[in-house]
Amino acid sequence: GKITVQDLANEMGKTVSEVIKELMMMGTMATINQEISFEIASLVATKFGFELTTADDSETEDEIEKLMEIEEDKEEDLKPRPPVVTVMGHVDHGKTSLLDAIRKTNVTKGEAGGITQHIGASEVKINGQKIVFLDTPGHEAFTSMRARGAQVTDIAILVVAADDGIMPQTVEAINHAKAAEVPLIVAINKIDKDGANPDRVKQELSEHGLLVEDWGGDVIAVPVSAKKNIGIDHLLEMVLLVAEMEELKANPDKRAVGTVIEAQLDKGRGPVATVLVQGGTLRVGDPIVAGVASGKVRAMINSKGKRVKVAGPSTAVEILGLSDVPQGGDQFVEVPSDKVARSIAEKRQQQQREEMLKSSQRLSLDDLFNQMNDGLKELNIVIKADVQGSVQAVKQSLERLSNDEVQVKAIHGGVGAITETDVLLAAASNAIIIGFNVRPVSGAESLAEKENVDMRTYTIIYKAIEDIQAAMCGMLDPDI
Ligand code: GDP
Image 1 (cartoon, rainbow, N blue to C red):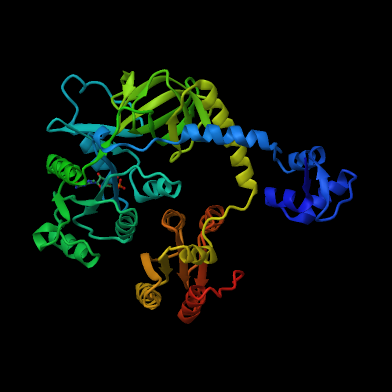
Image 2: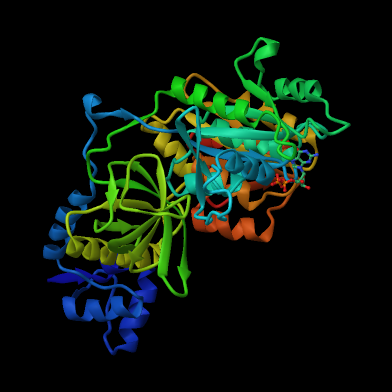
């Protein structure tokens, strides 16, 4: 087999001149369209950190990838499953305290003495029904999962301190939940405090499009005190109510599939991952692939710190036995054999190396509009500006550009620098970021590059309008 210099460069996401330079250093002179032997091409590929494979390999790859496909569920196989809940809200409004209070509602007399082990998720039972809580509070964790393609949360609890009201991160949380189309329940917290004013919170919620029930809307708001343990049971009952309306279901009788919630390397136990089983049933001994890690489930530990042998849908368990540490947000899948698991994981590690070297193709403004030609009708925008007035002005000007074909939609607007959270939201929602009189924080810039999120900053509104308009006509200069 032979390959041209141009094709080899393309495959690796390298420029032709980089490849030619490498060839020259190996003593081979080549031009752009010249064919080089497989052996030489392999050598060059290795230099760039790639492994050249022949066509035969890619066939088995297809076969193996097929094993990873999860068969679609038939309606009659679906059984009700418990809801998975995330807690979000502004810093210091009581997310952590609320999670603590919720965990305590369920400590039976027998367990009261034992400190339950933290596995990244907890389960409580109310009226005999189970609810699963993800233990990392905040919309950042929620959205970083989503940016990695994982949707684990069924319901979000928005904590708002009754003495403080809606704050910037509350607005972020609302918009993140909206972008994910996850239903919200509001916990109006700290009602035990002197300055508590739940009515003001309801008023402010309405200003952000959340109309609570006693104001004629359909948003459930529950007054609670995480500290004094007031209203917690009622809040949990409301979670069950919303869950019932969502008709959450899964098929427990198939290969297990789910998402890695968190993972780390434990000194004594090796790679340890908390996974949420979302479909099927995971059993000790099952071979699995989780991201780039593989292995046989050696042991499973539930949220109460007890060893278990089986975990069905909507169960969070800590698993031991993986070869490597997967990432939070990675999907895990049970596969037919250990060997298959290893081979898939290896393929993925290879792919990961290649992808890191290749420029990935997510999201530039141009791509978005190309996708639009293929039927994408919405342009999502995250707006950050120096003052609230500018946020509104940019939002209105850009949304006004919507026409019959393209809907321009500001999914989030906020005051301040462009942060990593903004980038994750944009990545998760196929959005671009428009900054007006603000700059990205340094971490945000590199993250945007990594996630390939199109981030544009302006000091003149009209320039932003022009760009979006130009893009809508397909005339945008990609190098702006
Ligand atoms: P987080 O940053 O949202 O996780 O907030 P924390 O749970 O850490 O709570 C922030 C502070 O508010 C802590 O000092 C808590 O003790 C306090 N706090 C949380 N909930 C309540 C409550 O219901 N009443 C009162 N009075 N204080 C609370």
